Image (cartoon, rainbow, N blue to C red; front, side, top):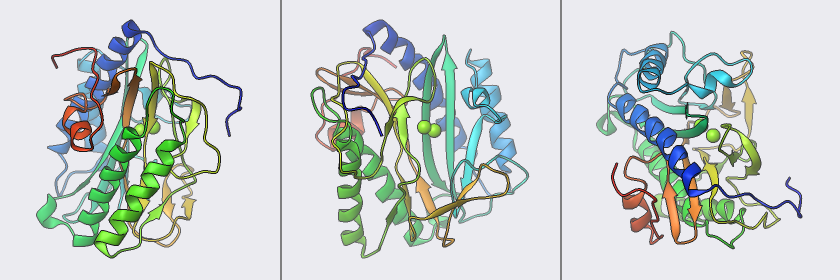
Length: 284
Ligand code: MG
Ligand code: MG
């Protein structure tokens, strides 16, 4: 998957500060969208809101830079895992939707996603709320496993351990998708190395100061098998079970971690999992 001898490259502080600008714009776009996810809205309306927000804040919707893709978001509903294309679908109370968003600012990129219940938690099925909570927890567990000198594929081990403990606690079986991966991020949204959000046999390359990657576990209420719909983009679970997806772009620093796409830099989430928070800026 990634050459044993390949060394990861770190970003300079100056570059990380630019990536923070992009990440913060993504975080603020997702925060805005979280307030717009309601019954009756179409996924295309959400996409337009996101594009306007990003452009009016000096960013470029970087999903539009992916060959063949012309939207600002991926909106994946219920059994759709990732890469759902915004369109005329009207969201209904109790649906779960993953909203994945990216932006480029001054040549640097951010990429993040969250999954929400349409109509709020009170409209959600208990199993969907548990799935979303387990997915988010696994994201932060994966992020917290990153440290300078550590191995990149510790991320996937931590995601799986977190999901296993959530499954025990919730008395459910969760599927950890292993057909799609996280990725390095910087001057482009998708860069080497691939970052498995699931356990693999190898340990992966050694993490260096200033490494930036996007971690994005995709978890289902059933199968780990997926298929792609005839639109050539939308990934759905093979068994029709619902799926959740959560993502952040993260900088690994000598003293700890900085979640570039979290509005608070990841301070709260990192502290809650006992990981060191190491931002370059102090204000947001
Ligand atoms: Mg993404
Ligand atoms: Mg990504």
